[in-house]
Length: 262
Image 1: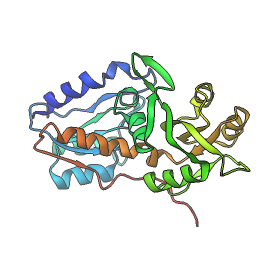
Image 2 (image 1 turned 60 degrees about the horizontal axis):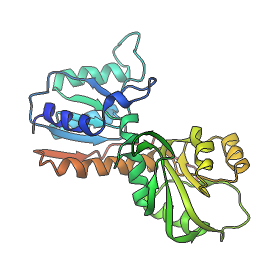
Image 3 (image 1 turned 60 degrees about the vertical axis):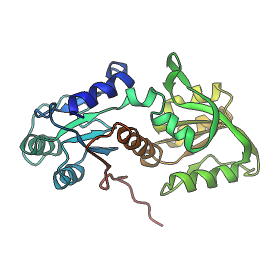
């Protein structure tokens, strides 16, 4: 399959026109690779390490969740990360494409994958954007789990370096309704609370956002940005494989960017 056909297939599924005004979905760098047979390296974040990996593997498309360019740079200078990515992309004919907030909303996108990992039933968007689609998912745990069991399941399934959760006196409380949103989901705390969820799993929550969750009667669980979104990249690889591409792989060089002192 040619890259142009792969992108057309993807955009029919996750239209880049759905991306938020502050976002930058779609082509980040297209150095003239549209007619080439797709050799795709999928990653969460396009970095120089991922570019070096693509070069070593003879990939011609880096398909990323996070955009390389969030706002127009005022200059491109040697030694700067975006400039180096652009330079290497054009030298080695490697395109960089991003599917961000459009991929967050769709069926089997970042939110759905997280809901599937936790085996949530009857999952529906926390905030609907169009018929059947939207940000986050809320669904039922069947059978219900204690909070302790749910925390253990999240740790086992997502393997975050550290789980942060709301202080609670009762780890044995029964949890049957859970909301999830991969990546930075703190702005959806009040929306998650309105779904009658008891627990909200997301990432990048600050001190006062945990207070906000408590004020809403919501147990907030922060499993980290990487751990909550990387599984969707794996799911995307599986979806691409079903198209019988010549070659597709999940990046080994994706980084969490964070270490925690023991």
